[in-house]
Every structure is written in C-alpha cells, then in structure tokens.
Image (tube, rainbow, N blue to C red; front, side):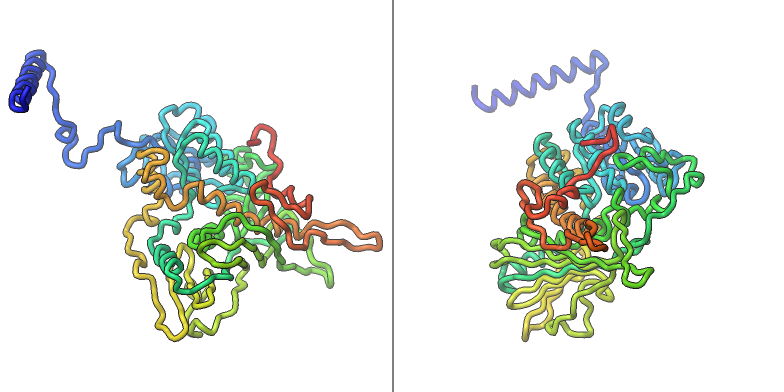
Length: 487
C-alpha cells in the first residue's frame, strides 16, 4: 500500500472512532486542554514523603516538591504538636497525611515513591534502610550515617534495590565547584600533595560533662522513645533536644558530621579520592583540676585536629595528606595568598585549601568564594559563583528528576551526591570521628594513672572496614543498637 492511501485509511479510521465515541457520549480531550498550560497529570507526579518535617526537613521536602510540581502525600515527625517548624510543613502540604512513627507511615502509605530523611544523625540509616527495602528512592541529610558501617550498608543497598539516592550536602551541586575541578584538571596548580580543611564548629555546647536528664521537662507533643530510636534508652534530656544532640556520640557526629560533608566534599570529588590508608588525631583538653584533663568519652571534644592520608590518584600526581581542624583552629595563612584576603569564608571561619606545587585553590563551604592563586599571576575567582537561582542549587529537584527518570538513567548518573559517591565520602568524614573516639581509649597503669593507647596512627583497610593495628578501635566502625532497631 502506498503512503498516500495508508494516510487516508488512518484518517478515515480516526474519524470513524471519533464519531462513534461522540455518538456513545464519550469524549476524548487532550490532557493539556483539561489542565491548561503546564498541566501535569497525577500519573506524572512523584509521590513524596518526609521523615523529619521540621527545621531542615521542611526545606528538604519543600524543595523536593518543586513548587508543587510533585505531590507530597505524607509527613512524619516525632513532634505531633507541630513544634520546631513541623506546623509550617503541615501548612505547606495540608493534604499530606501525618504520622509520628516513620515505620507506620511506610507500612500504610503504599503509594510513596520517594522519601526525604532529615532527622538527627543517629536515625538516618535506620530510616533510609527501611525505605530502601521497600524500593523507595531516598534523599538523606548529611552526614549520610552515624558510623562507617552504616554508610557502607546504605551504599550497597541502594545498588541492590536499584533506587535513586542523594545525600543532602547541597553544595555538591554548586556550579562553582566545576571551576575548581577545571583548574585542577588543567594542571593550574600542578601536583597536589596537601589539602587543609577547617571550620569554626562546634557552635553548640561541646567538651562538657554529660548533662543530667530532666524527664519532667519533656514536651507533651514529643515521642521521646521514637526520637531515641536505636540509641540506648534514657530519660528525656533538654540538653540533647532539639539541637544540641550534635555534640554527643549516641546521637550526633560533632563538628565533622556537621560540616565535613560540606567541606571535604570539594577536594574528595575534585581529586577523585577513595578510601583513606590511615588516620590520626589530637584533641583539645578541658582542665578543671591541675594536671588532670577531663575524661569525657560520651561527647565530642571542644576541638580536634585530624590527619588523613590517601594514595595518589590521577588528579593528585602523588600521595595526599589531608588535615581537618575544628573548634576555630585555622591553618596558617600562606605567603601566596595576600594577607588582607580571607581564606575560604568571611573571616576565614571555615574553608578548604588545596595546595599544589604550582599554586593554591581556596574556597568556603559548598565551594563558595572559590579562588585560584599562582605565583606572579593575578588571582582568579570562580566565574560561576551563585549563578543558579534555584533553592540550594537545585540539589533536591535534580534528585526528584532522577527518580522519575529511573535508576542508572543519565539524570541519575549526573547527580552530584548519590550514595555511590557520598557513601565513601561519608566513610572518610567519619574516619575522623573514629580516630577522635579512639584517642580516649585508656587502661590503668600498674604504677597509677592511665595509658591512652589509642593515641597513634591508625592503619585502615578500607575495603574491609577495619583498623589493622588496634583492634579496640574497630568498635567505633559501628555501634550497639537498642533492641528492635538494629540494621
């Protein structure tokens, strides 16, 4: 049959079907006519849910909804009274069902496609595992997990379940990081043997004795048992909730957990780093008695200095030493950077310095204020600084688009912090905490006093997640879980 006759036959068939449907009272109207310009059919929307709906959780689910483009079907938070910003999320999404227990939400809301998880650090892994086991895509706030083992579990489970993932270190999607990568890839600073990372955190109480619980102060609308989750059962403590949990090991991950995934992300990605080969540290001491430092193993120290070594990569040209300092301790101002210029952020409060044999790159959190310094050359600043007008560089929106495109789609592979990347990054960040906690391991000497036997360079077998020269340090690769919460 020639093409002309074929088109005529197809046209006649369409006319016949149209007249038949009209005669029977059935009308077919194009979808865009039903909803007007920009109409998105319900079947084209992602069904989203939030575990942790206040604070950072509110902006995460709001940004993931892409101004209402996607459908938020459920919100979950331990605060049933709407405290700490939860009521704002309820107002943002009045049609969403509300739950206190994420396990009940996942059991009842069968149509959820993807979940944002914005809880205290100790809850990230248990919530993410529960969601991924049901093949829900997940967006998890930084740090991805509370310990190294959990990060490895999430990384491997995402692949097994073929779900699309993203960690909430939004600076990973900052386009100015591309300039840093271009400067390194084009050899602007030569071979790189040193990276210095620092922060002004902690900005919450830290390096103090464990505060006394005050169960009579528990807010009526808070389910404290759910807030504790996998941690050891303990009475309500207002010194932990709602924010200062960050400085206590059962719940938080200290200054490294708060800022490490924002800052270390930049050199980790640009230099194509993998698992470290060793880690060591020193920490600040608090003295209330002469010659007797406080022994405070339950909480993070007031300051720390961590050194991590990596094997050479195709980006460094030689083995790399990375140092991390917190508590306001900054690296020295190098001669190559004019003394009147800040290093990284304003006042040099936090930053990254990548040192090569031909120059230095600096930036602040998220890759902001990126600059290139070379001897005899003018300072070069990032040309892409803050050109993106999307909230948080579109970090959540890009994850949503990748969820809709599917596992291993180009959109998925283009994500800047999927678990294939952010899992190993988080493991590296938490290696610093492993060293900090090992630093306080001690045993009594026969002649009195204590031997702090963990204050040494710890050798790391990244593939098998083990310290090879101090067995006791491996207890910090994981943690003990309360009955019913283990993963």
